[in-house]
Image 1 (cartoon, rainbow, N blue to C red):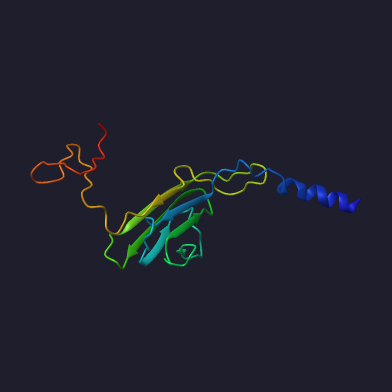
Image 2 (cartoon, rainbow, N blue to C red):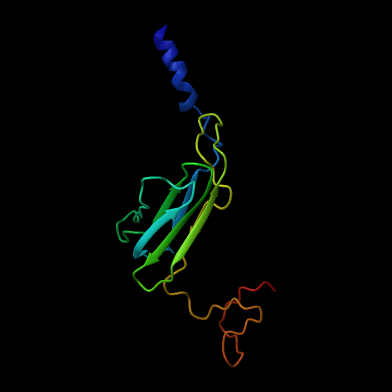
Length: 152
């Protein structure tokens, strides 16, 4: 009888009760192929992990030692991650909002209320990219070979 109760108790979370959990993770990624040469990483806000320093993780093959930060909220509200770099890259700030704690089946935590990730701009942006409304990327007005982000 005791073995039957143990099997029943563990079946709840070993089943599919976590298949539709709200996402409690927010990721800050480096641009593909780049390392984030971080000088400082600090977070502030009521949702930020307490007593924990932001930790940058490397890529799978170990080529780049810092390509991703992850925030898992400790409370509802916002968390701001401020990054500075040693490679001349401009400082970067990611702000994420987390909703109230969920208790959906096996799901627990504070879900992200917006996009679940952001990418740090590249150290050396592509030359020739023009996001201006007129699409004029060169002094002479010749847009040959220029990708224009403005919707036509």
